[in-house]
Image (cartoon, rainbow, N blue to C red; front, side):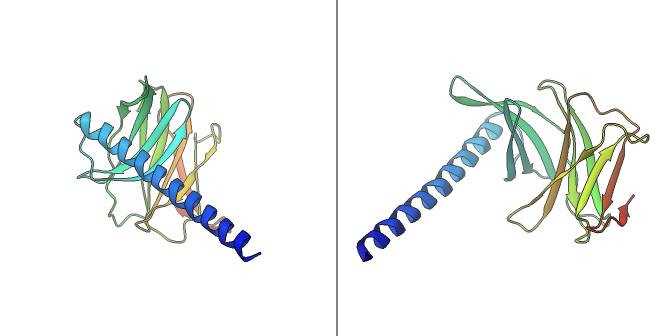
Length: 171
């Protein structure tokens, strides 16, 4: 019985470590691709599979930036990137609308600076095109968020941040 438990423990540790290594290797590949595209990057916060590629949230000299990568003939290729938003701010919520026409992918993204904010939604003022944001806690203990759309996001658009119980904190 001890041998079986010992064997299972070794298998679990091996699988867990290899998944972490594969994740780190993939992030390193993304980082190299972005650098080779002459895009200034300091670190990657998060990568998310979206459509036929990967949406990469990264830090540059200004703050949070986003880019889109696709695999082409076994190699990652920089497709498009959007403007950056400052990470440090007095505002509870920092955000930007980004139209990546080359993908095509249209999104809102930003940084949450108020720990009470638990939900974010983006929508037209009349309530149409409502999307609930995905919120990601980074290893740096920062919260970033985003919503995506199938069509360009043109103003006017509302970004609404609430507490867990629905109390509006932003705008």
